[in-house]
Picture 1 (tube, rainbow, N blue to C red):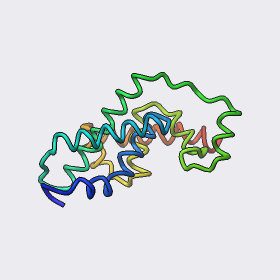
Picture 2: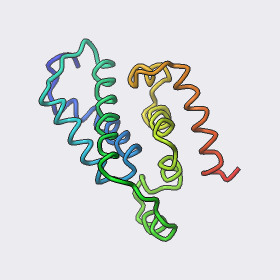
Picture 3: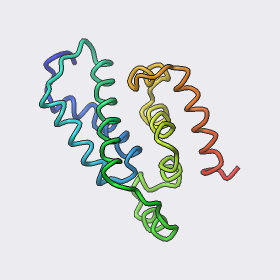
Length: 156
């Protein structure tokens, strides 16, 4: 897909990536839905021209991160009590697993790179390029994020 790609194709190709980032950063599906719409609306309005798919993907990742920051600033997220968390887990949605809850408990800088690396399958270099960070910074954030998760998910 190069310049002039059909909007439906772009959404179909990147919907999981954009929604996953939004969900990981906003910590709830309602705000994630808003971010998802905001990102693809901005894409549609601007109709940016990209040299290749890597550039398009990086643009969408950056847009999802920026829109998620704005959404998080609009709404204060309160931690769930144990009973509410368990009732959500019983519903069986993927975002309601213990791993997702632990991921959401991480600070933004760790949560985003962990999501991009483990869920989206991006390399540290791709994450660094998309987030405009150094690759060494991304690797350190992955290391620290894993250390934080280890205690939460595996109770080590």
